[in-house]
Amino acid sequence: MQWIDWRGLSRAFLFFWYFSAATHFLLFFTGATGFLPLRQGFVFSLLWLLPLLAFPAKARQISAVIGLLLGVGALVNLGYFAIYRQEFSQSVLFIIFESNPAEASEYVDQYLRWWMFPGLFAFMAGAYALWRGVRPLQMRPAGRALLFPLVLAVLLVPPAMKVTRGSDFDWTRYQESLLNRMEPAVPWQFLVGYRHYQEQLAGMQELREQAAKIPPIADLQDARAGKPGTLVLLLGESTSRLHMSLYAYGRETNPRLHALRNELSLFNQVFASHPYTIEALQQVLTFADQKNPNLYLSQPSLMNIMQQAGYRTYWITNQQTLTKRNTMLTNFSEQMDEQFYLNHQRSQNSYSFDSQVLEPLAQILADGQARRFIVIHLLGTHMRYKYRFPPQAEYFKGRDGVPDWADAEQADFINEYDNAVRYNDEVVANVLATLRQADIPSQLVYFSDHGEDVYDTPPHDFIGRNEAKPTLPMYTVPFFIWRSPAWLAEDKRDYAAYAERVYQLDSFIHTWADVSGLRFAGYQPQRSLINPAYQAQPVWVGDPGSPGHLIDLLAGAKKP
Image 1: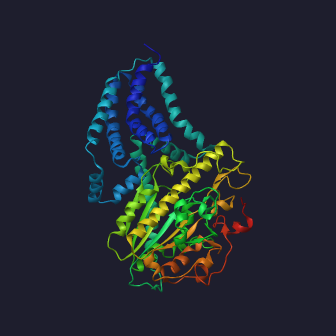
Image 2: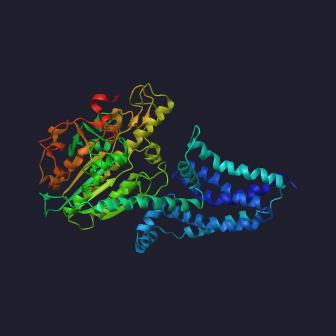
Image 3: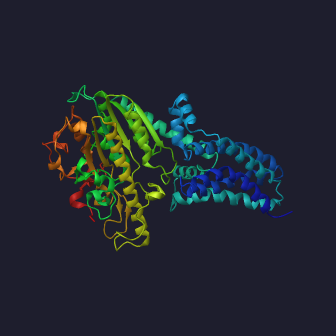
């Protein structure tokens, strides 16, 4: 008898890994996800060797039972991939539980194809063929006693190393790290995903209960009462105007929008309030600002106000639906009449292209409603940038236009980011084209939630965002207003004189009041970008929870 039955263990492991690997290879080679889920699925398939090491003579029977369990989960994963070309995640659970059976049936009927059934049958046949190769393990007890703790160590030690700092061990963070590593493997994405879904749902329920206590906005007046109109708020992501040729960047990253320049009211000095999506939009979409960060808990949101004004409201998003970071945004979306959740990926480092927003937008514009308020939330140019544009849209490849100081790795990131900006240009231009084709009174406001420092700031050694060390590119965002011919026939305001106004997006609700023709309690015209009564204010950045640490971005932040 051998010390370790490597052949028997390899056959059993290949059988167990097959149930995770089949979908992960498809996801990876179609570009839907990166390599990480494939690697984590490989590692945590080792877990199923433990019962075989404990009962080696029963290896075939045990593997058959485990295989049935894994097979059910794998078939769900494969079926979901076949229909949606995405990875099953907790966001999918949210969609399932929030949708009624009729909606779910419509989605399946729309995407189901005949070839999926023989494909699933072939998958099951492959699993059966692998199981036939599993046999009782021929190992000495000492060999099994050696391997058992070794497999446990491979599974349990790496997450412990990640969360241990010195002599401190954070058990809560360890559990979270372990579960995140397990999640890509069958069947853990269902179990861990459901656990995360319940946690985030509890957080959402708390937010809903708080929102239910907020009274309607007082003194609401609508200058367009009774008039048809579609108002669109197009929210970008991580897009710095410093990398937009629309704002004189050296590379041609905005060919489509540049061609539409005469239709746009462009603003050149607009800044985000935070370099992070949740914190930024929490102020953009409510009365909260840098000096009063908690007003979103006691005052109506922009979504509430638009509903109260008689608009049918819609939320289209290509952001992940339900994650620990995105619970607040999902809560905002739930305040709308209709929601379209397009990104069900488990990881941000996955393909989910913003062009998906065009179909639901066209669907909304054809629904016959007279007054609409539509929020479209793009994934934009969020890191990692190479996942934000399809491979065929790659335009910048070499060093042409890349600064001389950039090394090879930095040049690759700059190219990826500029390609993402260029693809974002196409998406935004297509949104405008969809509105123009609808031939209705419509108005769109576009800006990014925050910017991104892509090695822009000397000494050119940082990429990303860090609120504790603010730099100008982290907050520098594009901002423009587009109006359809039908809207311009009624609203002939000229914003050209306001293009150089310095403005921060934590005051946006006041600008939106002027855009939409609304007045309400709390409206401050001096905080509107397009109001004659505008008054310039410092661009405060930093943690609003520590007001003493706020600094004026234009006076104190590092600049490129």
